[in-house]
Amino acid sequence: MKIEPLENWGMPSTAEIEVAVASRKKPFIIAGPCSAETPEQLLETCRALAHTGINALRAGIWKPRTRPNSFEGVGEIGLQWFKEVRDELGIPIATEVATATHVELALKYGVDLLWIGARSTVNPFTVQEIADALRGVDIPVIVKNPLNPELALWIGALERVANAGITKLAAMHRGFSTFEKTKYRNQPMWQVAIELRSQMPELPLFFDPSHTGGKREYIYPLAQKALDLDYDGLMIEAHIDPDKAWSDAAQQVTPAMFAQILGQLKIREATSDNVEFQNAIEEMRSKIDAIDREIVELLAARMNIVEKLGVYKRENNVAAFQVDRWIKIFQSRPEWGQKMGLNKDFVGLVFKVIHDESIRIQTAKISD
Image (cartoon, rainbow, N blue to C red):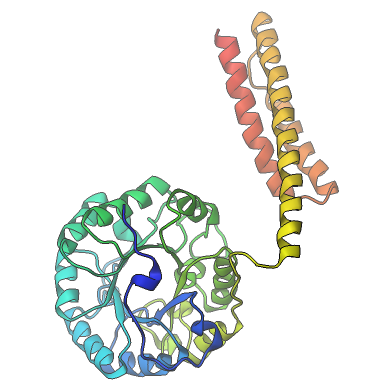
C-alpha cells in the first residue's frame, strides 16, 4: 500500500496565517459547518474561518441521519454554493460522500478532499462502491472509523480505497458508539486509533473532536489530547451561529471560538535534539524494560501455579471458576493498587485479563 505523506497532498491554502499554531507543519486543520444550510450561512462561516490559517474548509452536503424527517442536507445545490466559496476564498473544500453518485457530483463541482463517514465505513459494500467510483482519480480521501470499535473493519475500508489507486489517504478518528453512558457523544477509545497507527505507521491520522465530544466545551481538551498523541490533523465543526444550526448545534463553535481553540493548542514534537533529554529518556526506558521483564517473569510464575491448581481441581472434581474467589480478587487487587498510587480501574482491568487467562488455563487442565 503506497501512502503519500500530508506534505505531498498538494493542497496549499491561500488564507492568511493569523493563528500561530496553524502556521506549523502540523496539524493539518479542516474546519467548517456541520451542514451547508443556505448560501449565506455557508459563505459567512467560511469567510470568518478564512483568516485562521486552516488547510481546508468542510461542509456536509448530504447528511446521513439516524431517523427519517431530520435534515438530511441540501444536496447538489450545496456543492454549487461551496464551489463559489472556494472560488472566492481560494481555500480547498472538503465534504462527505456515501455513494458513487456523491463522488461523481463532488468531483464535478471541484471538491478537493473527500471523506467517508463512520456510517459508511461500517459497510464494506458501501465502501467498495465509493472506492470503485474513485478509480483513476487523484484526490485526498479520509476514512473515518466505523461506528463500532472494530479495527479490522477500519483497516479493510482503508485498504479498499487504497486498492482503487488512492495514495493521498488518511484515517479519521471520531470516537465509537457504545451502550455505556459517558459524557461524550462517542467514546474516544484512543487505544483503537493507537493500534491502527502501530499497524499502519505511514498513514496520516486525523481526529474529529466535534463528533467525539458532542458538545463544544469538549473540543479543546479532546483536540489537545489528540495532538499530545502526535495526531497529524484535526477536523472541527464551526458555524456562524451554532445555536441555530440545522444539525449538531451543540458540537459546533463560532469562528471566533474556533480561532481561540487553535491559539490555545500546544504542538508537541515527535522527539528532541537535546542530548540531556535523549539520555534521560533512554535511561528511563531501560528501567521500564527491566521492570517489564520482571512483570513477565512474575506472570509466568503465577500461571505455572495456576496450571498446578487446574490439575489439583481436576483430581478433586472441582470446577475451574469459583465466584467467591473472583470477587475477592476483583475487590482486593484494585484496593492494593490504589494504596500504591495506581488508578483503581486500571488495576481492576489488568487483573480481569489475568483472571480470564487463569480460568482458560485451569479449564484446559481440567478437560485433559
